Length: 80
Image 1 (cartoon, rainbow, N blue to C red):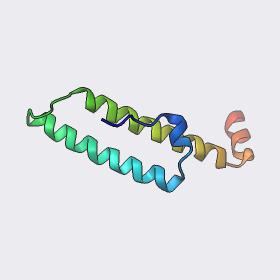
Image 2: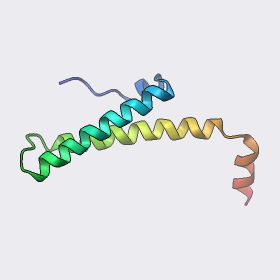
Image 3: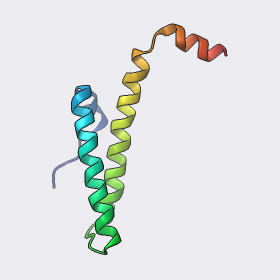
Image 4: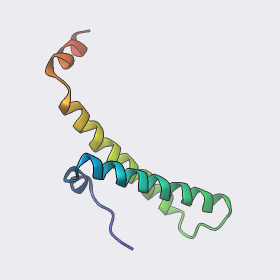
C-alpha cells in the first residue's frame, strides 16, 4: 500500500491538484462506507485514514483561503 501524503506534501500541491485529490479521497471514502455497510470491508482502519486525509486537505485549503483575505477584514473581525 502506498504511503499517504503528509500535510507538508499537500501544501506543495496547487489548488487544482488539492481539489482533485480531495474528490478522489471522498469517492474512496464512499466506497469504503458502502463496503462497511455490506460487511465486505477488510480493514476498518481505512475509513479513519480516509477521513483524516480529507481533514488534512481541507485544512490546507482553509489556510490558503485565510492567507488570501485582505488584512482589513482580519482587523474588523477581531474588533467586532
